[in-house]
Image (cartoon, rainbow, N blue to C red; front, side):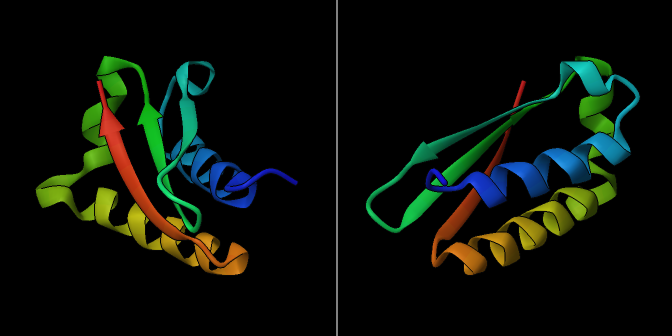
Length: 83
């Protein structure tokens, strides 16, 4: 199992349940040191607002879930939403 694989699967699943265009989701895991990763999330432009949510509440929830998944792997996780 590669570093951040659980994080990638969990974040992809959660984002997939929110957006309309599931086929345009991209979650890339980038190593940020030996025990940290960054999950870079890209969606269709029309879905980005849904993923961020009002006042960033949905994005914050996704980050919390990503951190919980990272705890399973002993990783510190940062989730970035890129357009």
